[in-house]
Image: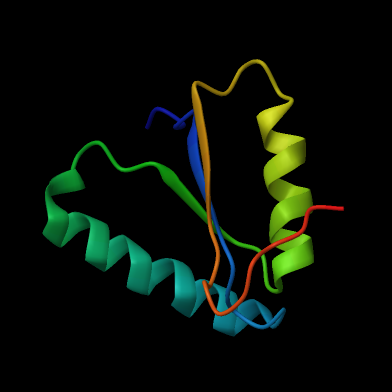
Length: 81
């Protein structure tokens, strides 16, 4: 199996391992239905907004990654500070 160097960091999962896995699974199913089956990026549920942004920044600085994205809730503007 080839490890993906494309990542999408997800706000969600609440920090609990089982909830994070369920979040990743739900987004995986959504993306598969949207036509990404067979070319799926690695999905990483990171919990809260700040942790998701921190994980995204770390992954974005890694030059081995071809693509890094972040999905966060849109209930309010995000200030990366």
